[in-house]
Image 1 (cartoon, rainbow over the protein chains, first blue to last red):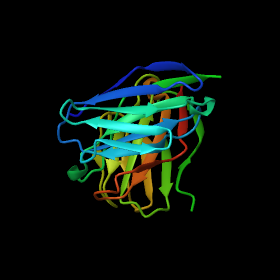
Image 2 (tube, rainbow over the protein chains, first blue to last red):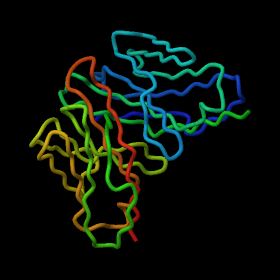
Image 3 (cartoon, chains in turn purple, orange):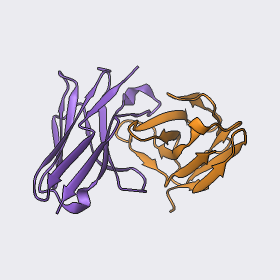
Image 4 (cartoon, chains in turn purple, orange):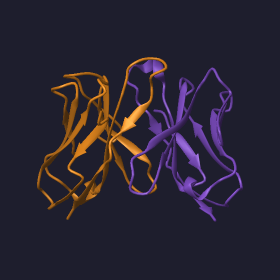
Length: 114
Length: 114
């Protein structure tokens, strides 16, 4: 079945630096790739997503890139701020499968030091 | 519009006891999901439902049962709780169809099995 690997498991950066989290997926039929942010004690919340017909998507300081050939996608956060500290999850889905199931990576704990 | 809600927020059980976790959504979503979240393992799908009266197994279904008698509710049952079921449980819901793949999460239920 589908498998999603996420790296690194922890990431510590200085405020203002950039952070990059990478995920690889196994199912070539996957065509939807969301990223969720989970603050301590809170629910996961969607921050950005990308579909397989697009190579890159940006939303202010956040961007996601997708390489379908290599089956990997990445989250880029620029000008990091302390409020970006959280656990980030990538996920993959085949939206033609009529189940909406997401397969999640293991998560990356991002710490932004002031 | 409350979104996705979960009941209870926290529960302590003794080994062998049973309980039911309730998930409710008011967004008229067709799809609903139950996940468990354990440290370092991301979000793992327990069971899911693509519509009222239907359920299916996810990645880690053993020891759990579900029911979806009404479109807005998805119940997760533990018939005989085990310490291995200590976890944080999240419910999520979403629409069916292309361009609507986003899943919306509830606030979570923290379960401790002694």
